[in-house]
Image (cartoon, rainbow, N blue to C red; front, side):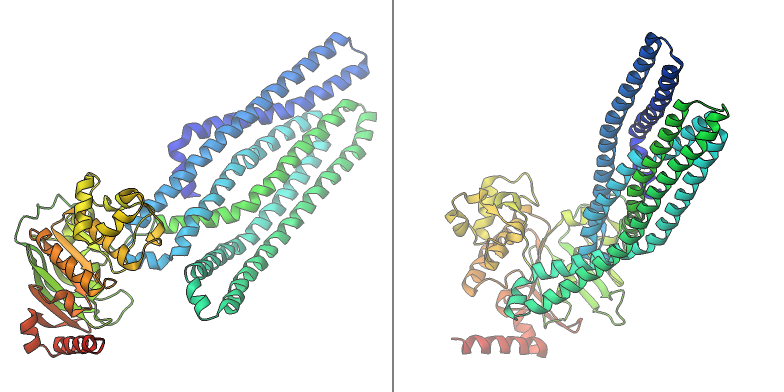
Length: 578
């Protein structure tokens, strides 16, 4: 509830206008039966037709005011809930951008997607229903009970008892279904996760002929969700029956009691119509409120799930007392000082005792076996993870002492798995430099050895790129990602195994063209292939997270057994392959 109030606060004017129109609508809906009873009593008494006509005019005006207020209230309410939904989604999106890799994995991709799309939609619908069908209920109860008690005390008490009993039943059912709605949302997360896995991993499923197994797994998730939904719907079907029973019982009681009350002269025949209309309007809105009650437990659980993300404190965040970091103009662009790193849920260090300097105009290469921590170094440089011990300096400043956005302004990152965004090639290349000209884009493509295949495309730089770059091969995506990094022209280039999908000829041509382009910047290359880093100014060899060698290629061949073993295995493999 606190979350909803927080996001309603900026739109308090719309809230007040919506409530005002709803109140006018409710008052009009209850005044009409009063005028109807008055007309009936006047007709029975034989009053002049002109008096009846004036009463009819009053009913018509009340109906017009009530109808207009209902339409305007609905339109403003729809606008209000749409704005709240947009604000919620924007807040969730901004918060997910602040989460580190470990934070994001804590919630899961499927869960974050469900919270941003489905949960916000549920809150929007519940909020819309609450304004239109739940908010008028207490107002209608109060006004209808006052009008009923004015006409007859006995029937007023009967109406009060029926309304209180049905309200208590509704409250009890809502409380009993709240835990099931909580379970329902968790099952929706599981269902989304399995569905996402099946869609993204469809080729693996087909390759291993596991369609039947995955179908059974998916059906199991569907069945669990359906079973819980049925349990919830059974409770609300009971509530529907109770509400209809309450309406019929009340009408019977009114007719039963009214005969004696009319005979005794306590009220007139027309008053029966008014009291029944008050009761029907009250119970009609009460039944409409059931729809809201159906959504409230789910909406409250959705609020809790969204609040869980919004209130979460990221493990990596900017300090509030940070000033502007100094400009990086030094020869030493980045320095690792005794850096060690351990994941939060791990007992052992992933990286230990890293000490090296990335200098401007030099290439620093990092090589090692699978699982040695090479890509983790890239994450630490980008500050996707926080160092456990030691410090990483950009210039003279610890990267923890500067805003993350400012740190990344000085870096260009080409990740191991090349990723392109839907749009055009030009839009992707300008991702790091929106002001880059077409000539700069073509130059970056030339250096990245991607210009030839881009020119063959019908639309050149304006050629369409599918989500993730799925309409290009792995090598083409890598070359486009490298070109995107070159367009930015940063102080440090970080290539995380970015040449793995390239053949040896393209790799050699790219590295040769790359050398003059990065002479004024530091370069870090994380690689598996020795051929990629032969001419690096310094090579750091990792084994199980620890540096076991550091130097140039020739030095390491003589002094580092691990590096020599990697070199010999790869050159032997190259000779065997011809």
